[in-house]
Image 1: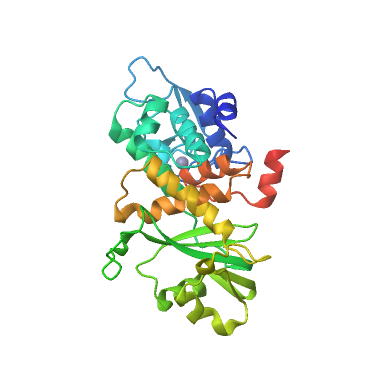
Image 2: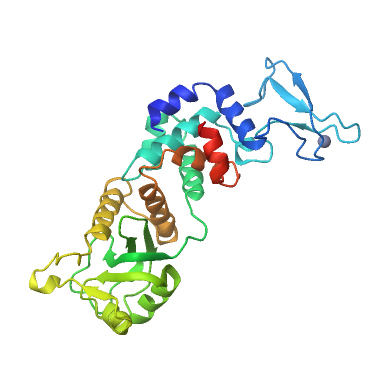
Length: 309
Ligand SMILES: [Zn+2]
């Protein structure tokens, strides 16, 4: 969904809330989060004396010993937020559709959010939701390359500050993964490859002439190398163009939207970029991200298809 579709489907806070309710109780049976009793009473209330962000109704648990008051957002991140749900939903759509990423300052302008701190929090929470847990190992043809974000510092080869060294792995016609690494050593390559590639399912690993890549992959019989040093960039199926194009998007994003990223946050930004990149053609990306934000597990395939129906 793009921002226009999101605006249509979720035009009001009530629609956003109804969506969260449906996600929380997909069978339509509302249950008290405290005791599990079904069918609570819906209580209307005056919003005239409203505190911040109070809704005009709530659920009241019908179990006498419980009497819990709750709403579809109780216990989720949205429960405590000052911002209307609609702002969250729009922010998710904007961040998912900004190929090169979206800074808190830009988000603030786009959504007319009062304070920078609020926009920053929103930006970071959504970024957190874009962290994938454990990912499946890659197979088939995998391209691996490394890059320095912000450009290489010439003349400091020996004592390079490696804070912005990133390794990119891309399964051809498949997902990309960016990993912040400390150095370009064979040991680092070995570790990254062991964690992210499934040896029995890998057909080829494509790299440039990195000596570490050669050291680690030489004896696997699956290593194909493109020789940039002799001006070679493609030799039949041998190239690293797919991972390099993902790198170039990442770099343009980092330069354009985020002038400086602290080391502490770099991996989070990398996760955001790969999360978005890997879902660029996935119509469920918006819903998946909202679910993650609300603390619900991603939909199963069955639930997905029934939702589409
Ligand atoms: Zn209860």
